Length: 94
Image (cartoon, rainbow, N blue to C red; front, side, top):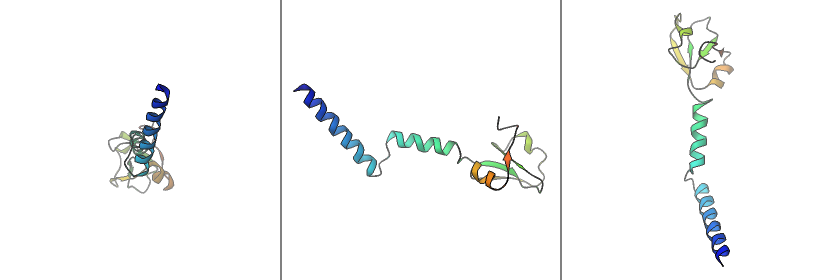
C-alpha cells in the first residue's frame, strides 16, 4: 500500500509540473536555459564605426578599440556581427 501512495504522489507531482510548463509559468529549468541563451550568443558586442574596422569585441573597453576614430557602436549578438562581416577580436575573445 505504501508503494502505491508514493506512486500516486509522484504522478500528481509530474502532472502538476507538466501543467505548469504548458500554462506559461516558467519552471526553474526554463529560466536557467533562458539565462544561458542570453549570456552567450545574444549578448551585445562592440564594433568600431570606422571604414576599415574588421573585428568585433566582447566589451567596449577592449584595447583593440583604442584607435577607433569612427565611434564605438554595439550590435545585438555575435551572430549579427559575423553576418555583417566582422571577425572575432584576438585580444578580448581568448
